Image (tube, rainbow, N blue to C red; front, side, top):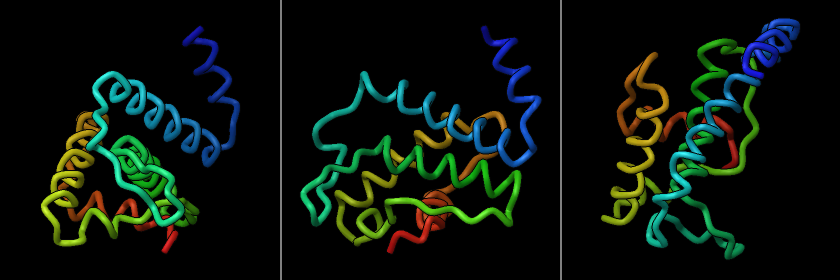
Length: 127
């Protein structure tokens, strides 16, 4: 099945292929974190919906991959890193965990620090 998926991606335009690869990486990240996610690894937005470390990390991975492959492609995304940089111990710890997750998935191609991860999250312009 993997070979046929690669064959299908190969027939897409380059931008579409990069987007599909970004989503595949984000899915890999989410599956890896599902089993270990703890209740304290999320924040509540103003509308009371939760945002987990996996949400932030997946957005950063998609942002990274698209920016790397096609920097001219704009990204529209839901989250910002504001609560991760709010100066609280909780925010700093969440950003550390998000950064760790991102680097786990991107280990073969790059290593990012917390400021780079936060900037990738903010690239979506949700604020």
